[in-house]
Length: 223
Image (cartoon, rainbow, N blue to C red; front, side, top):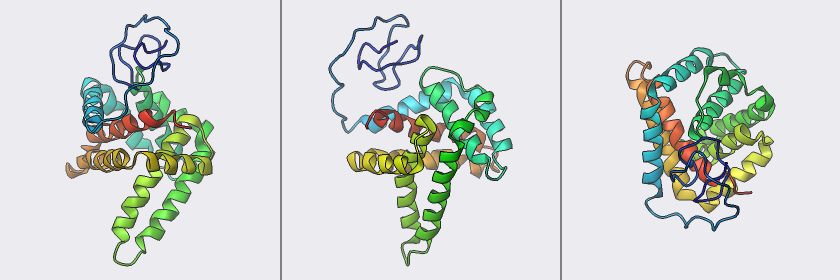
């Protein structure tokens, strides 16, 4: 079905649009091309944060189970890249009106090769940034922000690693401030559960990840 407000394709039966955040009729008609939504405003990050928080609270029980299974299998070296991709796909499905079934954690083998190459290059860049004199931590933060959009592109579109990196850099050049906020705040939210003897991460990790997904969805149609 198509959103009546922004014209983008959304999951059949959805009650809201994950792109423009407007309510839609589950049986809304296909209205064809419509004018693009208004340009982003300074309140966009607050809208994304509220949207991510609402999704997180409304589906907390399912998200805890989904994240718990991910944590239990996510320690396995190498293949944990595929499990991470499956985890992101599950949360993207939730954002698009579906449910994050645990089986989705094992459904991302189609993009494993591209995701593994991307993760390896990202890891090498983090290590290199950490050796920057005096500014190692700051350089690693910059690498994290620059590298995050591309990995979501690999997971969502099975893009090749280099193509995903180019897309991510280009996207951040267009919208640097929203991406910096999404990655840094999302990372802080997601990791805050580690304070509670690490167990709390099964509650907070999906919250932070959903925030980053909101920003990705806004830019996912950028070529």
